[in-house]
Image 1 (spheres, rainbow, N blue to C red):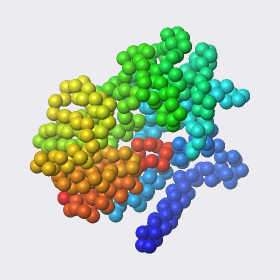
Image 2 (image 1 turned 30 degrees about the vertical axis):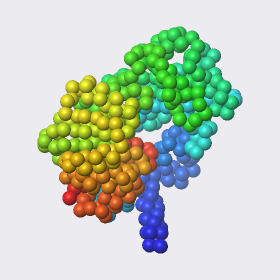
Image 3 (image 1 turned 180 degrees about the horizontal axis):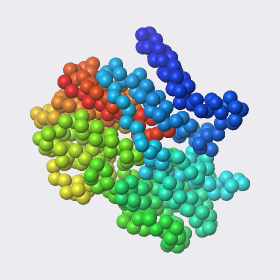
Length: 418
């Protein structure tokens, strides 16, 4: 009963905050309405796409709203610092995905699924996405028409071109294009690649990915390199990383550096500590802090990510980092059972947050400091409640980071210690 009352109060407070911020941030829109002008969105498809909830809100107002949301959810656990925003918040996504479709009266189109559906909304320009990636997707679409390639039909299973994925190295400028096809054969493959590279000589690699299943997953299991080395490299926090088509790599490189710098600051490393990077992915955090620690252990369940992490350590000639394919909670429990000591644990779990099994393992090994990176403040609040309720750990500081401008998503980094 008490929990229901608390949730009702929280919702009321949140609505008040949203109304207050909207009043302050949208005065210009209100004034134009009073003059009888029709308000036009910055994005012509924002109502259908649903990706940019705050597309027409001034950026300062977006940050104020996100700050209030973070405080509402997290301030009971510790001090919430001012949100870290971007100087240039547009076109930050270095990974761009487009779905292809055939529509009557338009022919082949590329774009994004309408929210809560599989209807394709045609999109040529997106405020969030890397502009060069958008240009390449438009070129693929026009070339597909001239080469008489058919877009894939989800209902019938007929057609070839399903998706195009473009990844851009923010620092290196290297570009990967992934053509996701419904079958393994791309007609006139050599000519298609030549024409695409003539239009965009900055492309460094092109792959064909085969997805012949009726699934909402973008990428299939089979992959073939048809131009270049099959991956790109990028630099982050002074380290170089190999990025393959399926690698997890943060989509906003500028804010990732800001996030990791804050995480490293919270870790208070002196060069002697044993550090564990849980949910380590391709090793970005582990390798970023390796120079400040004695030994770093990265733990990740995905074997492809672990393979990339090992490669990335070799690329950067880092020898004090070791990567293991294992469940992070099980691995920490094994370390505790073996009597091993850990000074700092970084954890960057998925949006669903961590598991009780992992948090219990964390409490078993009892590091001096825990640096929790979260992409969902609600699950962070849940996990902080669990940790602080079951131990002497206390939240020392929380810093929200705006990783995804124009959307409602908030990232945060949090320091816990005894």
